[in-house]
Image 1 (cartoon, rainbow, N blue to C red):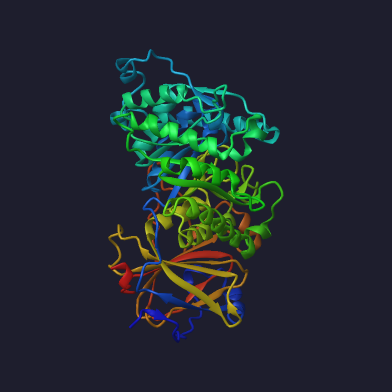
Image 2: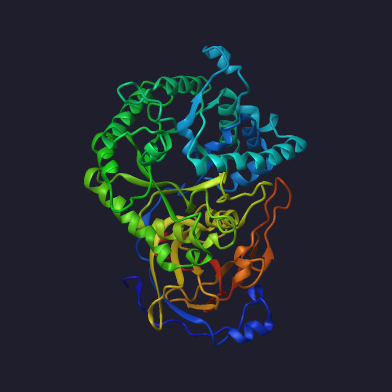
Length: 545
């Protein structure tokens, strides 16, 4: 048996599932107004396999514009939220990394460095932000964001100096949360000959090594826009040479000689121009462990709700990814490719959209399609920092995309399987589906289990027919809907899992995130404007054993 099933599907119709019925009258009316979707799957082989830290996150470097805000990273609540996203990289970078310089306050001796602020080993227990100070910092951060927004609009960025304290706070956050830190260095420190001036980076590296801070590195952020931001032009070939210089510095270090180096963090290709990336790879490909680029679907200042639900907009990820991968494959075959920074809308996000329920359609589709395309890691902009595309809000409460990310982490493994969805009219556009092996680190599911995740971009419900090869498997459903029904609910900042609004139990405890069991042989009914994970625990997928 080939394992490929373009097969007849089980056609048992289920009137409704109580856990996602909005109202009995509305449900009855919708019974004959659904999209019927059939699936073709191949459970015999792994299509792609992504990094175990595929879904990763960023903290924007804007947080260090005033160093006191780095103390928000000692919030027990924020640490609790971050732990649930492991394993993952934590990228510290963004536009302002190229305006930051390390300004140590202690003498450059190992003894002073060891005693400078605190040691990472006991920081998790010793340093926690007092509630009153946390409240004050959150209030002041709201005002700080207004200033940062003005800088972004004017494209005038002030120079920022950070001390050992900021580095210690950042590293302790990642260490206590179980995240792997990637620190972004300033590429706009230039010599008179326009090569990278590495002296400040050397000072920072020496400090981090003296503290035994294990981390990876990047150099620069979106070099395509250096002329607009700083009046400095760095071509691709020179950029590659700068990375070679950084790699040599790292190789001189006992701690960092084999550490990760990622770049060049270019913007997505525009007008099919790839000259900067081509030049970079020509001189610097051997210096990096993965090639990074950035992707956003839309401009946050002129987008709409319709864009967030438009399958054609979602498909632009594939077009841009093919362009980048084609360029990399020609110069550096086999090089890993990352989305080193990504979210829904550039320009800091779209107000009233990027931090609401509707943003989940872009985010979950990017996770599914990105893995299918072979992207190895996606770094979500941002966990916290300036902008409106956060995973947590100004009160450090989780937003819909956060809960979506946690469920993805728990249920979805790195092995991508082949799946296609068809309706009566052909390949469906409004229902999008992806299939992975279930996360093997979860002890709740059997070997060979698969996780199907699906998005319904339409107002009406969809009925997904499970192929006969896996129709005998029981399923566990995790259906995410807005707190409010209909189009208005798309603007909500709350989300329901199987009918229950998700909230933290307390600052140190997440809810249990339980699925709802479905009997074998049932169709999967996906409500309108929703997305869901279905774990088929008895699928016995050969590729997942």
